[in-house]
Length: 139
Image 1 (cartoon, rainbow, N blue to C red):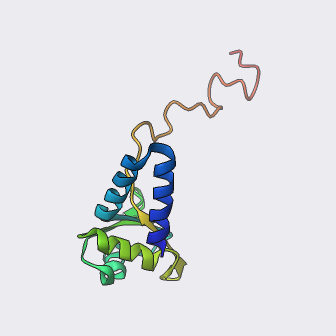
Image 2 (image 1 turned 90 degrees about the horizontal axis):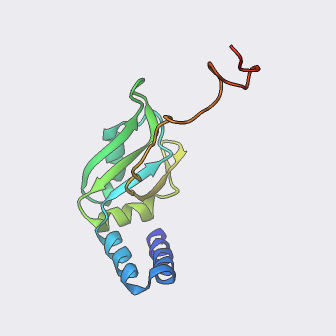
């Protein structure tokens, strides 16, 4: 059901914005998409348990829980890659909104991260030398 809703929403959006050519590309993408994003994971979950949770929907090529680089602890989300789009679609329909290890998870197709600056560089949060927030700034 979730898959049908997703297809319907994509079709409506594609037709209203770009016409039928974009609609066909959207359907083609969903039919071949095999990588899923899974949010809301239990912080104790590892790659193996994530793979086990999704393996009943098809062949899982890779399951990866994203961890904090400093602590090694799960960040609460991960990715599951299936061998076929049909398996990925089945997993979304069955698992999105369900409970896994005591937590409600969200499952959707993974999308590419936009390129560009994802860090904190270049931002001025105030404070430090030369800041006018804490005084007159004259040194």
